[in-house]
Image (cartoon, rainbow, N blue to C red; front, side, top):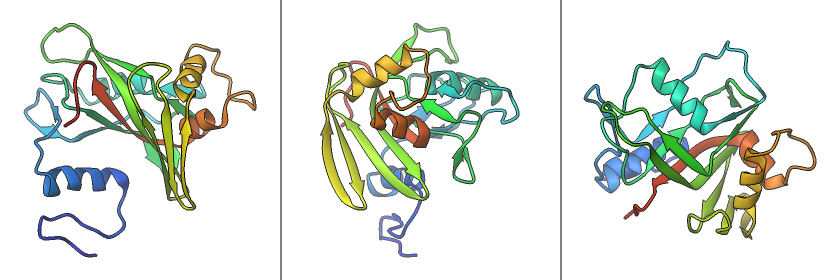
Length: 205
């Protein structure tokens, strides 16, 4: 395992550990999330009750709310400039639901002080299957904004122009996962690992 002068480990590591090291050790950014208990972090790890009877498809919004309540957490302010959320996993599989849908618009209300609901836009998705990561990046915050898909093995970069619309259509449908659901949507909801949200009218710089 090799470590740079700035403390960033350059050998293989999970994407969440890499992101935290990159932001903290290499870019020297301040934590994005501040909790009311006085501690901070760059990402929120979702924790839920694994034995609860659940529907096949869950959403990031519902799981975030449950995770905050289960851990008795409140945000002391809106996470900025971005909200990073890691999905619950065990032995390489999602916990609680067979599929997890990332909401295009994430509404957060778990704050220390009563505030108006804060809305975040989905900007990126990292999928994981059998230790292989793939990434979906959104260009813009409109439903029809195009997405790009990245896969390093084999090297693939391709535009997915209608992914936002497809995700929205699935969110507001009966959420039955079958062959009629577009393949990119099935990949995201089945392999969801890590999501990045940006507060509306905010920029990541």
